[in-house]
Picture: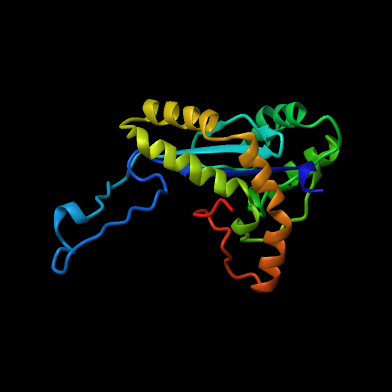
Length: 201
């Protein structure tokens, strides 16, 4: 069943903090030494990107300009999701997206119905259940190694990471983790489980 699902989501990346955790070992009294601090940037450059994944591969990347509303999301589905699904599936599939208001807008719902896009029922606030979250984290770690300093370098790093770190074995592992994820979410009564963005297993 899970091999017939097209998972999707968006993520935000910036040159100075790409979701990668930074750990520092320090001696007593070193807490505020410059070398032990993680610097931040006010109003950092950010890009939002949307994509999708399935057991057979990943979809096209879509760089989002500004905030996503219903009209913009419909454009993403038409320009990015549909060709990605046509490439990844040769049979019927179900499309997964979360319950953001723009995803549930009447405009989008009507288009999905007219286009025969079957949407997987999905609980609200459930990043642990979406394997693409783990994929975004792995991409962010790769981007952080390149140290991009401007928007062009950030986009280039993102595209390179998307094409480099995503392997077939990794996708199979993520998709096949779904039954275990579901069991653990039920067991935890909806509270976070180990399949957060810092886990690939």
